[in-house]
Image (cartoon, rainbow, N blue to C red; front, side, top):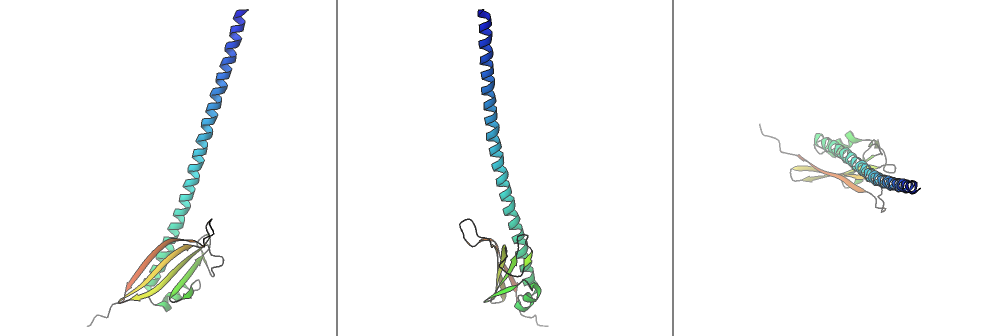
Amino acid sequence: MTTTTIVRNNTKSKSALFLLELVIAITFLALSSVICIRLFVAAHTISRQTSYLNMAIVRSQTVAEVFKAAGGDPAKIEEILNPALGECGCGTYQLFYDENWQEVSSGTNAAYRTDFTLGFDGSMNTAEILVWNNRPDGAGNPGTQIYSLTAKSYVGQGVPR
């Protein structure tokens, strides 16, 4: 009779150990999955920010190339970039883009915008190009600057012949 009692007690302690081991394994897997999910979210956020930066660079380079091709002439720049171009005054212009970086005609539905200001400094035409995220952030601020670029075009004197 005593032999049977010992076997039963040994079986109960084995099942309790197995249960404890199972709880520890589930806890470890749960913590690991939380860490992995956080890493995936961070990677997605970084990927989205990189995409915004790449498109901002492309849009600002496009404006810079138009500026250089037009020789800094505001009339030629307006002709090339119309109808999406809007003048704010004082030589400052704006281009507006939707969520997919497609040009839109007004800033009311724009997710992004490019501001550029034309200037003249001695023998150089200059364009200060800023690309903005038009959407307010969580704190209610109107938007953040994504990228800036300064383009210069030399306006030299003609070479005598």
